[in-house]
Image (cartoon, rainbow, N blue to C red; front, top):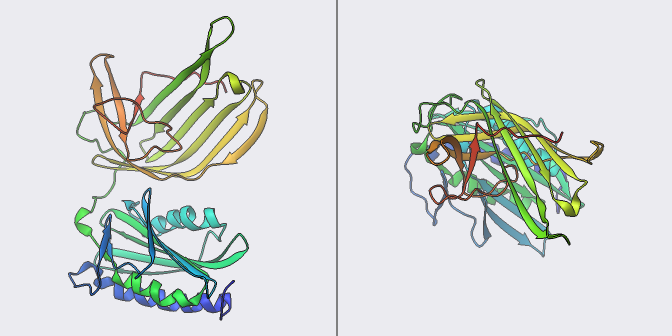
Length: 348
C-alpha cells in the first residue's frame, strides 16, 4: 500500500523532483567529479543508491530497496543502450510500451516532459500501475542522442523514495564517445558488397528415440525467416512443430516492425508479434501476443566455401525467444545463420 500520501500526491511530488532534475542532468555530458563511488553500465555512469541490492540481468542492471517497516519498496532499472530511431519521441514511445505499458498494463500515451541540450534529448513520464494488488508508480526517463538511446525505469509505492530517485538521476553521466552515426537501413557491414535486404531463412530439427519398428522418430523442427525491406521495415515468420509427442500442434509466429543498421550493428524493433496454435487441419486452437523483443545484433555476410553459400550471420550475447537456439560454428559463436538459398516449406 502507498503510505502517508495519496497516489496523486506521489505523482505530483515525483514529477516535480524528477523533472526538476532533468535540467540538472545537462551537466552530465561535462566532466565533473562524483562524490560517492560511481559505477558504469553500458553508456551510463552513475552513483548507485547506497546499500541497495544490485542484480545484473540480460541487458539491464537492477537496484532494489525494500523497507519492511514502512511496507515500501523501490526498483531502479538501467537498460542497455540501443541504436536510436533518430527521433527522441519515437525512442521514448518504444521504450514506454516495452518497459511500462505492456508489462504493467499502463496507459500507452502518458503526458511527457522533454528537454534538450548538448546533443541529448531527455524525455520523462510517470504513470500509476498496479501489480498483484499493490499500487505503485512507474517513472521512465529516456535519453536520446549521438545515434543512441537508453532508458532508466523507477517503480515505487512510497514517496520516501522520491529523493533517492532524484539523486540517482542527477548523478548520471552519458558517454557520447560511443555514439553511432545516423542509421540507414541499407548500410553494409563491409564484409561483402551485397546488402542483406531481402529474405533470409534458417531451420533446425532433431531426432529423439525410435519406435517399435526401429524407425527414427522426429522430435520436431523450427523454421524462421526474416524479410528486410529497403524502407527500414521487416517481417518475421516462424513455424514450430514439437514432434511426435505433440504431433497435432503447430505453432506459427508472425512479427513485424522496424530495423536500423549502422555499420555492423543491426537493431530489430518489433511493433507487433503474435503466435497462433493450429492443429493439422489448420483449425486455430489459440493465439497469444508475444513480448516485443528489441534486440541488437552484430551482423556480417560470410561466404562458406564448403556449401558455396553466403550467409547472413547475426551475433548477440544471449539467445532470443524469436530466433531460438544459437547455431553451431566455431568461427561464429553465439550466432544465428540465415540463408537466401533456403526457402522454408510452411505447413500453413
